[in-house]
Amino acid sequence: MNGLVVPVATLGGPETDPAEIARYVVGEAVWAPSVHNTQPWWFSAGPSGLSLYADPTRQLPVADPAGREMLISCGAALFTARLALRAAGYAPRARILPDPARPLLVARLSWEPGPAGTEYERQLSARVRSRRAHRGGFEPLPLAPALLAVLRECAGRYGAVLRVVTDEGTRAALAGVVRAAERALELDSAHVRERTAWTTPPGSTRGDGVPATGYPARAERTFPDFPSPDFARGRGWGQPPLSIAPGRSAGVVCVLATGSDQPADWVNAGQALQRILLTCAACGVAVALHSQPFEVGWAGGLMGSRPGLCPQLLLRLGTTVQTGAGVRRPPASVLFTGDGEPSGPAGRRG
Ligand SMILES: Cc1cc2nc3c(=O)[nH]c(=O)nc-3n(C[C@H](O)[C@H](O)[C@H](O)COP(=O)(O)O)c2cc1C
Image 1 (tube, rainbow, N blue to C red):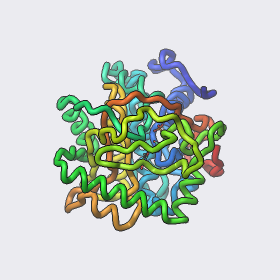
Image 2: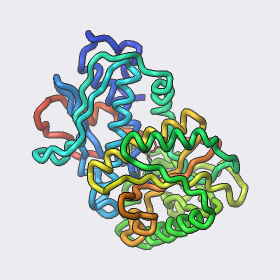
Image 3: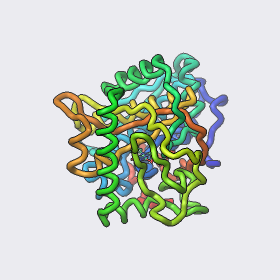
């Protein structure tokens, strides 16, 4: 699939070449989720480890002018890199922003030989490439309360909060905000142009953007209705629907929030997000993500923010028969060598 895949079994010893470890880590990290699959990151490998940088040429200036979603995406890549190291028997150390001299530096990652990864870490690691964002409804089955407790703990590890919304009225209200925000986005030509630029046609060989294998050709209504972004825009793109049932369950609705709303919180929200997504994947649970309300000025404020609780993303969890292949840029195109301030990528897509 990618030229840089390094078999994990060959790693783990103190004698392993750091460049080989870096290639393995980046080969895993690129499979993190990112807004519109923009993959807004690049890595610099040096003798002291790996540095993860945000790539502002891949930021969404219309939907994400502050770079919040860009940094959540980078946080998800950071979690994936740390997980890869643990699963291969290394003890990672991460230093997260800020570095005033390097505003785009998200984190520096170093490692030393450590204990073998735990069974849990290996289970998560095994899902990094196969996990997919879900778009649509779920089977009407409850999730185990124990899983929800574990997911809350996943968020808490990074100073985030996963609020599970059980009250029907609040679920309906949140669905209404997502619907209104999605409608506003569809009516805004600048948003439409930006979304279109990151949506690739069937058969595209691009390694980024949302592929036609990533969403159903006919939008699945959920109850209450949480519409996914309208990537196809009437062009008939997308996969045959998973179900012909009108109105499938919206699943368990959750809001991922942080204590404050600074860049470091966004990175930590991304780490929490990826831990949650992989834990769900390991348990056979799919997750739909909704950032539409946060991309429309007025709607973000309706997501339940209060002092000390800043919503970052809405998630819906449930069981479904998921298909669909993901696409990524080759890891070699985002990994550069040098410990200083390397020139970084030219901002190419594809
Ligand atoms: C910050 C962030 C916001 C996202 N917002 C949405 C969203 O509003 N709707 C959606 O369907 N997917 C959303 N996603 C999922 C991405 O589209 C998805 O991760 C990307 O297309 C890569 O696909 P994969 O996760 O299946 O590999 C979001 C992901 C991130 C990290």
